[in-house]
Amino acid sequence: MADSEGAAPKRRVQVINGVPRVYEDYPYWDTEKKQCRHRRTYIGRLDEQGAFIPSKSYLAGQALSAVDVVKSADRRFYGAGYLLDHIGKVTGVEADIAQSFPSMKDQIISLAYFLVQEGESAVYRFPRWMLSHWHRLTHALGSQGISRLFGSITEEAKLDFFRLQAKRRLEREYLAYDTTSISSYSELIKQVKYGHNKDRERLPQINLAMVFGEESGLPVYYRLLPGNISDISTMENMIADAAFLEFAKVKLVWDMGFFSAKNVNALYHAHYKFIGGLHPDTTLACSSVKAVRDGLVHYANYIEADDVYCISTMINWDYAWSMRNGGEERGKRRMYVHVYYPKSRLIATRFSYSQQLQEQAIPRH
Image 1 (cartoon, rainbow, N blue to C red):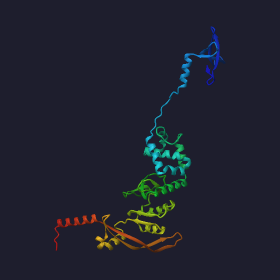
Image 2 (image 1 turned 60 degrees about the horizontal axis):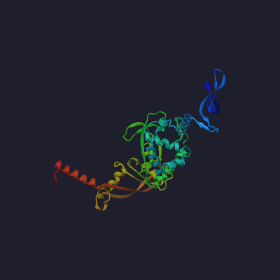
Image 3 (image 1 turned 60 degrees about the vertical axis):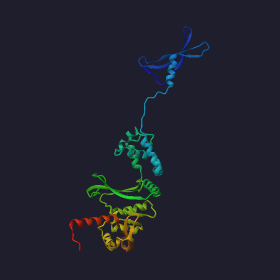
Image 4 (image 1 turned 90 degrees about the vertical axis):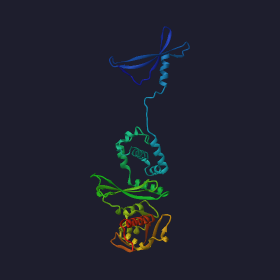
């Protein structure tokens, strides 16, 4: 027999022993007899005025149906998500994502929350993470959906986001530029090349160049470079990035690893001001120290705030730049060289020399 599920029951009255009894009639199809039959359920009676008086069992059933029964429980982790949500609002990252990726804002932010909280977990675990953590999405996002999302992020939208972030960071802090290497043996990534990492190990790698806030550490922009590009060679890329990010009045500060004649000429060509360190063994460093060595340690050259001796001199830099049309620019460019000598190093050197005199018992004349 098969019930006619979903059919609304009809109330029927039958007089038994002089009492009008009320039933709910449920029609159903009898598959064996091939005919429609009825099943009745007693629910009450009628009084003398014809008013319905429900039975106790009927009232109990009605009371149960009115109660919302909890069929399942759900538990989610909220703390980290709320913290990241607040950070996104305070730093302006959320607003810039919404402006650059308006149709996929919630997907990108939710994926970012997953990557921050799960560390090195693969992205394919994101759907499982969604079941136990708070996020922005109202529907599931599977592996195929994630692939489509990544494929729909255009370079134009990413660059727009970088510009917004750069402008926001420059309002409060200086920007820093640095490179790092990521080792990889993948044969599918074209930018994987043999190069030297910071430990001078020759490995297949990708170089990651990044611009970030000096104080906040928040990234503003990144660029993937072939692994065989050295720190010195990244200067031209950095100059191109600064132009793209629409920086005004750029002043570059670099460590001694970026110094080369080619980089200095590139900065002069781009009309950027710069301050950079020199390796002590470079020709410019050696000649500059030699020129001021005799008069460097003098009270007139002492900077008390930094506890160093300093002499600054102006030199003429031999500028040369090859143009795209085959021509060449040459000339002299003004450059200031600052030679510093920490007082603490002076004291340590003199003390060390005095010890050597005592140990070796060098006769004095």
